[in-house]
Image 1 (tube, one colour):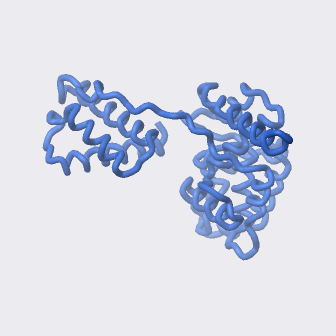
Image 2: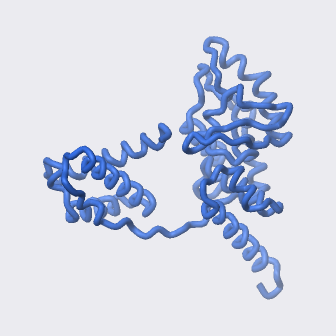
Image 3: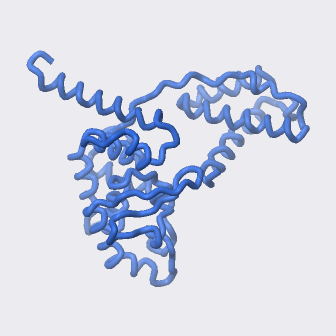
Length: 278
């Protein structure tokens, strides 16, 4: 699994250990359905989303299955505990006009406006995840052919296209800012910090939040918001759902189909707003 997935499961198990310590248990043999019910209630009290609670339960279940395989416990009562039902929420999507404002937000008052604009542009032009953009290497970029190669979940490689605006933004960053940032430290990665180190997905998250706040975006905006916006705008422009699945790197078509619901809800709101009897 990817380093991000490992870190997430590690954090989930640490949360479980914290709860168990506070509950006075001293052994995994003491964990039963009552313990798990208390753990879920504890997570709810912290106002976590159902999806986050479900993931933490999965981490605990997999941990106890590991203990069974290792012979530490003979059976796992944890597997009998069911995960909460998950609602499918429609993702937050920016309008094309708001995306344009976001891409134009970096200015010369910022430390590295060309880099920041290139990052924002690549996020929206490709629909890539923040971790995929942070992992882009110089060798992955083909500006003349207008595409890049990215490594997604499960180390699955895919090719995504770069539009002319993204190509121009990358070219300006490569020629005018990146040489200054890597003069003391060489890097194989495309997007780097002022010290030449590769930008992390957290760096990119903060970058998006900074410029979203600057233009007055309402609600929570993150790198994934640009991914959602990319997918929805592609469908609105006539892209086929199967092609979009490949572009986004989704293993299942069901994951991609949520964007058809987003587009339908957008059309309904337009109809309600514009129709004389809407």
